[in-house]
Length: 129
Image 1 (spheres, helix red, strand yellow):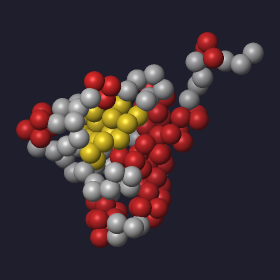
Image 2 (cartoon, helix red, strand yellow):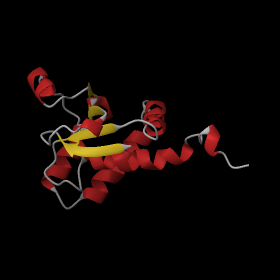
Image 3 (cartoon, helix red, strand yellow):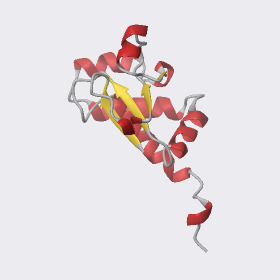
């Protein structure tokens, strides 16, 4: 399962691995205070598209399109596929710092990984005969 939360939202027991995916890093104190397990800023949207989106908050579809294209062309696509498949059995929470809870880098990453989940191998006990 994948959840998306603002960095400052409360930590919950079912958050699982808490992953920062914005394009900028976090100070060590903030990582510890917010219980961030992994800082994967190399998976975040480019600084250019992030800056554009902050200037055009109604442009989520444009932002998401550019971000998804970059993820598709990324050398990290195999890792993203692994995360998508692992999310079927493990809990992950993508942390963002956006102002809009429905339109941010965490939601865009969630949407991308949701599409990748269709390529995951089904469990052996759920295979159709």
